[in-house]
Image (cartoon, rainbow, N blue to C red; front, side):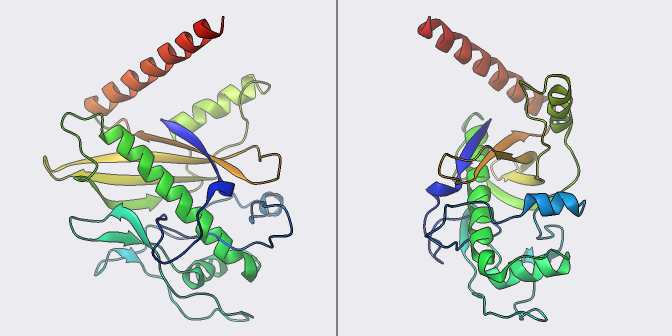
Length: 260
């Protein structure tokens, strides 16, 4: 299960709006919308595009990234300190929070990324938006489970794995190398592993999420594609992956027959 999402459809970023677990936001309205990350500069520096927040650095007391709210050295403008609450359940009573723009900027500085401060809020908005969309894809998978309910499951922990290609990503890279006119040759710009817990059974399921850049819209708005699926850690996950793939094949065949 995967989908393409456009930044042009993003809602205004507020502390109460539904958004995702890491933030990206604020461009000049007079210029066409575009991705604030300079991918060419990243390639030149031989640094793969990736989420700057270290998802493995979790504070054990509150299960949230340990990121400072203090201004970075040489920072020239104030950045918001407010953290947005996501729609993603952390347990039965709490939801995950996204880093504030200041925390996100500090993560960029720590990784040595040169990012214009005025673009940080936009970057936070995009990152949060993508993670919200990823959670929606997880829910689609979970609803396929017998008695599955989106109100039951929660994201118990997660980890960013930038630069680590999943087996599926490697397969599509090979396909792009063999048939570049048909398949994308760009690797995913980020990867997350999310551990979802099903409280009714106590079972934990690992989901793999590959984040891809897609061709921009005619107005220049960036588009992203998410490939979200349960990892092949169990026979049940393998069965679900095969079932969904089969359903997609039949759906495409029926669509082609209707066109003819």
